[in-house]
Image 1: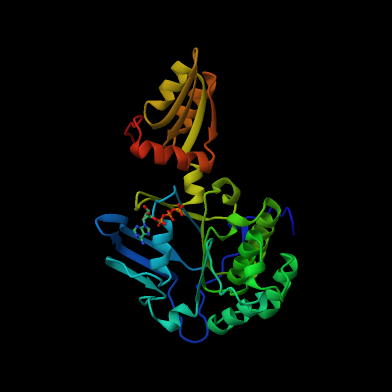
Image 2: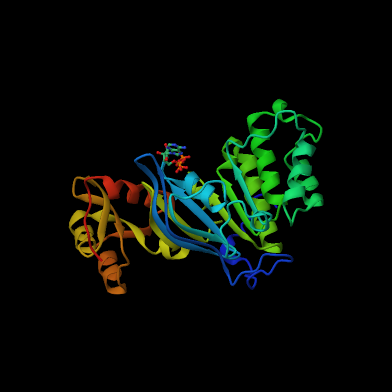
Amino acid sequence: MEGSTMSAATLPRSTPTHHDGTVHHDGTVVSVRGLTKRFGDFTAVDDATFDLRADRIYGMLGRNGAGKSTLMQMLTGQMFPTSGDVEVFGAAPAENRDVLANVVFVKESQSYPFDFSVECVLENASRFLQNWDADYADELLREFELPRKRRVKKLSRGMTSALGVVVGLASRAPLTVFDEPYLGLDAVARQRFYDHLLADYAEHPRTVVLSTHLIDEVADLIEHIVLLDHGRVVIDETTEDLRRAAWLASGPATAVDTLAAGMRELRRETLGTQARVALQGEPSDEERAAASRAGVVLEPLPLQQYVIDLAAGTHGPNRKESR
Ligand SMILES: Nc1ncnc2c1ncn2[C@@H]1O[C@H](COP(=O)(O)OP(=O)(O)OP(=O)(O)O)[C@@H](O)[C@H]1O
């Protein structure tokens, strides 16, 4: 499975999941309306409104301090909003056992009771999470080379991250939220996590939210992006649409300028008569053809760069409005 080229976009889509027991929904798993969280006079999440649909992998992206963790804590019932509404499977998640039995939230700084062994952590999780798969948890322990009997306090940082990943995956929770739990993992273990996530998601579709700074690393995994900037939702779009929304144009500056005239310029580098410009917007076929004849090379802006340029553009000097 390692090195798999499968991506979320190619996976089969199930119909909205109807789980046994209490959780039923019409395809909208999370509904957030005007959600706001203030700490004193500081607004960490500012009037957020969006939906998360069943059986999709979402990327929750944003710079440090953008409000991702705060938002995810409200989604998973760990924090009360100051104002606005959040519904998970049609109900407020906080202190709602039925909802929370179908939600797993794994974070980077996850702390487990120090005296618990690895297997004790898994046993505990299995008691709270309705769809827990013990066989899959065992398989994942072997895969991530986690010693069952070792106490949590004796685990390395990477092993602690791996334990979070095992809990998150084996829970098969209809709403699975990972708040950068894989930061402690090395590149090989991260790839293992991505591969497992995709393979298991194909067999057991669920709604997954991944928060990460490693955007290009997960770009093929995530189907939809919610981008936060200073607590506000600035992008809520499918990855496919986003890929068509931003371009890097390189070539003779005058020809690049002609193409850029109708688009929003995010960033510019010039060298003599040559320019390389990051642009937001969708050029028409005629504009593309004319640019190409004039020697302009047009390529999609990598997602990570787009997000960086957008965040800089929201607050930086180089802002130009357009279509
Ligand atoms: N309990 C709190 N009291 C006061 N301020 C807080 C509290 N929790 C979060 N904040 C502030 O809210 C803002 C958003 O924090 P949050 O942890 O949600 O950001 P983030 O996007 O997850 O950041 P990172 O990627 O660095 O983890 C930050 O400015 C943070 O300092």
